[in-house]
Image (cartoon, rainbow, N blue to C red; front, side, top):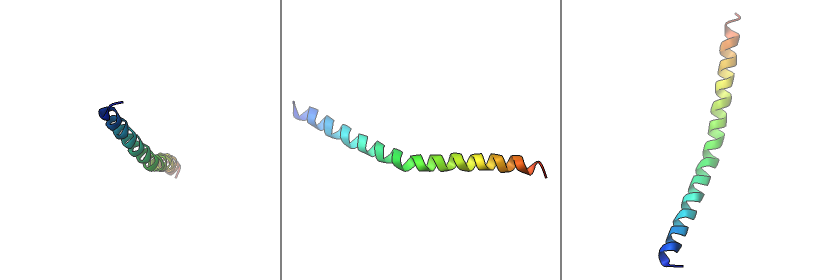
Amino acid sequence: MELKDVAYIVVAIILAVAVFYLLIWLLPVIIILIIAYIIYIIMKGASHDF
């Protein structure tokens, strides 16, 4: 294996870890936004009854 190949592998691992941590950070935010939107729709629908 050449030094260039090792450098590519190291960069790929660093990028994969960065994307992994970004997804772990973003997933709860996305889930919270979806739940908040569903609650908003339910409350908006319930307000038409009054």
